[in-house]
Length: 533
Image (cartoon, rainbow, N blue to C red; front, side, top):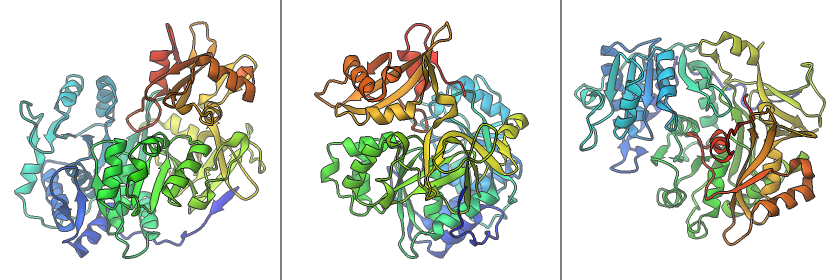
């Protein structure tokens, strides 16, 4: 077992909600910029705080309070962040609907969490109509006027709140209450709602904000959905007295421009997006001198590409390995990016502060260093459980320990190596193929810029290994080249049955390779994902 007790003495905030702590920080310097939207003027800290208080008062009058659920069909708008803080201040929980989720799936989530209010951002009116045709919601409110030609789905909450005075609102949350129910991506099965409590979240935010040097005024760029890790980074930044710069979505060229123009110090990226930034032709000339921390995680990373990124961006890479159910589990510091493990897999780092990690075998017992098994963790940000799924909760959360479903090992110095997901093994004649291991090999080929390996299950139950490959311009990364290369390095069992040349790897709403979509669209007649975790 490995553990990290750094900063474990960090005191528990005296509030029921993280929002109260952030509002106190905003009140100390009301004239500084807190939010910089993609369009329009910056929102000052005092204006942000007043917006939260006004919105909370308006929602409270409409019946939102402790135990209510408010569902968000929003993006990276300042109004969405203000509304989330207001909802949580009242003690209500938030639920985010993924941008790429089908309307029928959204409807199931909306009704399954007993949504009291649906908040819709300008530009999402069509998505709201499709959703509301399938689900009944007691109240629908918009976060601003609808674009020209669109019918607003409900009354404008932002306009109504603006008429109120910014009077103090008493926090309604208790530490054990849900601040969020976050639904897993659903890329390996039916999405599950992960219940996340105020108390653990407030403690983790305080811990990370406390590690930022006092007076440094961090500037974080949110270019991936605020509903996920970009939102966590935004909360840490605001709690540390910094500024959050908003981009509507990830575009490598626009991100590079924003990093330079806004003197961004912190950004969160999934590895595929980090690679796009690395490969963009504008990157060598971009002024990235203000960058201090480039956080990455959420999916497997290539050791070779991480070394390239470290050379290109400098000693700023921070790897975060974690899960929605567990929060942050391990961290890779800038000087550790050359460390690799079995099969050249890059290290996921050492246990994050307050985290215990064990590698357990099939019998549930701990395994010694160097042996692979399931990664089981105990973390300060562990979920309360799955929303209304006690059986699923019992299968994952036991005696405070979370079964991650990931396969990994620890070395003698306590560094973690994540080898694959238990549910993503592709069963072929001769054994099991781990997609992450094969992706790591393919990314070392000079003709492969990006790739995703996925399993396809045929009607007869057999499984095949497929690879989607984005080739380096002017290079051949076709089927015969890839199969020969893989066979030479790993053996015939690992050679993909099919190699699909694509311009871009499709991503889910949270930026992970959408392997279910790849299997459906590229797997041929009857093709479907092999992994059904």
